[in-house]
Amino acid sequence: MASGTKASYGLDAPVVVRNMLLAAAGCFAIGLLFPRLRWFISPGIGFAVGSGLMIWASLFGKIRVRDRILRWHPWKGDEQVLDVGCSRGLYLVGAARRLTTGKAVGIDLWQAYDLSGNNAEGTWANARAEGVEDRIEIMTGDMRKMPFPDASFDVILSSQAVHNVYQRAERDRALGEIVRVLKPGGSLYIIDHRNTGQYADYFRRAGLKNVRRRIPGIEVFPPSPVVVATKS
Image (tube, rainbow, N blue to C red; front, side, top):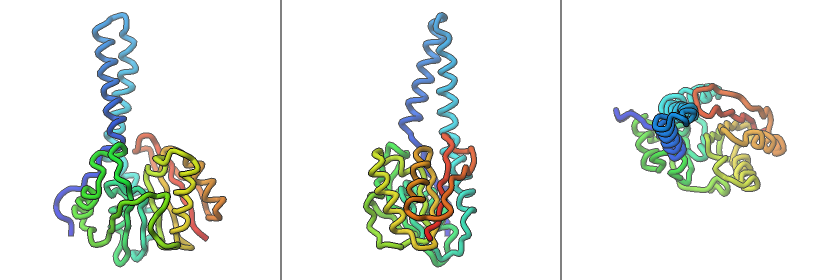
């Protein structure tokens, strides 16, 4: 049962949003104080619009996109689900709401740079708010070496997480772990604003089927494709 408290999934890239707002304020100040430098107002508008789009996407857009992506999967309710880089549980909780006898597991390193208030306590609070705390499990762990047996999960989700592994070889390790713990016949949905071509190529080389990139909508900023694939 939901707790009555509204879930909050945080502000994405809060440092980036802060810096864009500061840049906008600085550009406006220069343009208004020094008439010869009024051209600074134009980039200030760009920074302000960009930060506004990121804030709107964090509060509303990413929830709409999540629900759209989760509707792509033919849920039965008994799936074992893994959310790689679950942060405050946007996809973890969304998947758990579609389960009956299944379970959703989230794993993360809880980096505050990526999301405001990014910690396990916030994830549990959102699960309670959505009434799914009995259908989830949360753990701290590295996506490059996940503590799960082979072929553990029917569905694997990951949103804006894999790109935080900066070296390509290390990203390949994370993608290899995702393939390893996915059950034969299982499906994966990897959402990211960077490197999705690499992800798709890796999954094809690993023998996954129906590998494709889809655009789920423009409500997130920057717009982010989804890599969809099935393990044969």
